Image: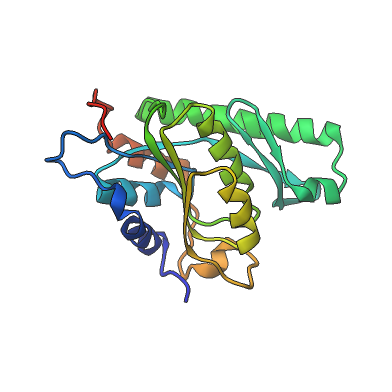
Amino acid sequence: MPFQNREEAARLLADALARYRVRPTDQSKRRPLILAIPRGAAPMGAIIADALGGELDVVLVHKLGAPDNPELAIGAVDEAGALYLNEEASVLRVGEDYLERERQAQLQLLHRRRALYTAAHPPVDPTGRIVIVVDDGLATGSSMIAALRAVRARRPAKLIAATAVAPAQTLELIKELADEVVCLEVPEIFYAVGQFFLEFEQVTDDEVIAILQRRPAAQPEKSGD
């Protein structure tokens, strides 16, 4: 059955991730870091962070659109400029010139978002943390793969990918990059993420900023198990 909305999916994901919950009275454990992939996953990340007693931030990546079909992901780029290309890029024989133009265009967008988001909430260092990367759903998985690669380079203690829905073949790719994958639904027929939500409205930058502004600034924490 479809999820009612992202909020319902987030609550269900939080239940599936309950073993990472840290209670306020447990000072011996460090809170998990929830990294949402903007923009759609930001409201979900906030719900999951609240449920787990975790800390919220974003991981900035953006898909690369195919020539003449920007909705089709041929890969993704992270804010450092690192590219991930999926098999669609090879099938479509996308040229190097197009890839570089698309990379630069999406990189500029990511830099603008980083400036906006940092003004609302300074970035949180994932080094040594239990990190849960959240997206509302995965189609090709390009954005999640780029995000996991970017976070892994920062040496987290454990890296978890969490999503509401994804096709089985995409999850196989994700499992190679994460220490654990949590996915609520793995449908046999998959056309687009939005088909699995009754309500799937676009999330704006202003909404992401508002979510981040409501989060307290990071405080020094005791390291632990």
